[in-house]
Length: 233
Image 1 (tube, one colour):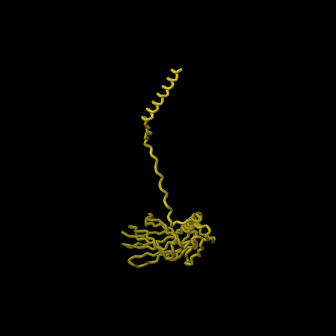
Image 2: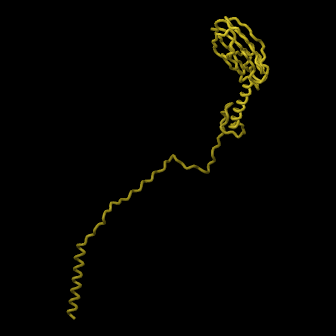
Image 3: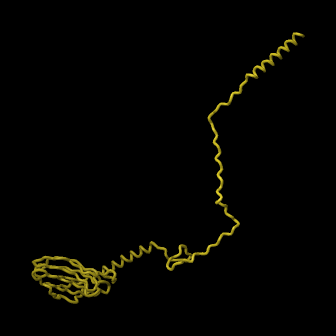
């Protein structure tokens, strides 16, 4: 019995000693620094004192319309119905009508002063050894009463070869006696036709029947001339 008690006392003594020994030498190990750092929160900025929230209970101020109106200046916004819209079809229609009218005038089927030729037309110089020339003229469009006058000019002297010559579908012949040197011929439109300007076609032949030139004048106004220069060599 005594031996058992002795063993128990010794175990208690040894246990107490070991706890005291280990407790005095124990050190706390600090945690490992992983390098992760948290950011500091940005400070909240103070709201400027000059910015104020709108007062929803305050009645808005009413502004009278400006009285600085000027005559002739349209308003930016208007509730009045206008016809200022452009229809693309109108432009196509106007262009087609213009082309049709011009074609009718060119063919002597319609009179329109806007398409009249108001300038003399020069057909250039013809050199020939022929003593005489034959000018054959007629109306190439609709027969509407075109009248012309033929004049030869030599050495500043005018000689009328035909006056009030009526143009129709048949050729009218004008004979010219050429002088040595320069001979100028003028075919003058004496009027406009009933359906358009004065129109005509001409053919010029020498004494051997060789055609030297053929052409036409188109839609001449009254007084406009077709001019030719013949040089007899």
